[in-house]
Length: 345
Image (cartoon, rainbow, N blue to C red; front, side):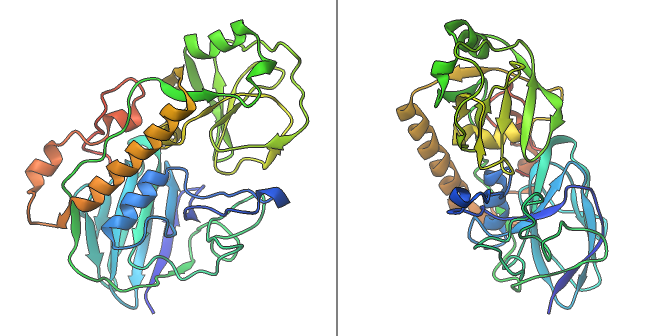
């Protein structure tokens, strides 16, 4: 059987798939990849369905030795280099590593999370329908543990078909992050809501898979800051008594007792999670119908990326690929809509 032997990796490296759903009512959070679009594109490039489990890196990369048989790989997400025996793999492309070769994922130059997908995914036992590692719940991953040096990660499938490259670059909405107000926006004064939408915030050093605390102007409550605990969606902006907003993410608790002023729409979350501490950002309110339209636009974008996959080395030369501005809008909240070429989204 083919394995990736983990030689080294950064803290916060884990197996993540599309998430663990249907159990939040029992107190089990979904976990899953922080950047779901990166997960989908990495999997497309190796011939997997979009939600297949992959290795998620947090800023720092890692290195792996291929054992047993060949494996098809692709990296997506934050700007980082994928190399096989020191030879760079072009951005937004898959490549095949043979037994004995060393696969290296470099540290992120921009952004925070990278996804490394392999042909067939990883042959790991799921917990409650998902391979996603959840630290606080002790579920998923490699024997209910994160990825660490010395482990052997079993690869579930052999390479099939040609290596692929993206010819239709992924695009995202740029500018202010779009939010839908609620579910407890009535717990905030008009001035508090105006603060959220009119001021600039920054990601603080208190940022992890559970959530990002934001630094900036305090948001005023109107009816106190305690509610009967209710369910929390990914992207919910919770405001405790300090007035500092916290954006709750993949490893969030299942319920919370602080009011949630708004929720970042799903289409903007992949770009949001790639922001590092110190990154500045703003919010703008949209309607529910506009949020649904944005989700459909994102799905159409992914369909276009999938439809534009071509055999590597044919249909798009390396110079042309590197000339594409593939990720600026993904990493920089104030950048243009396309994403920078040195990021493997």
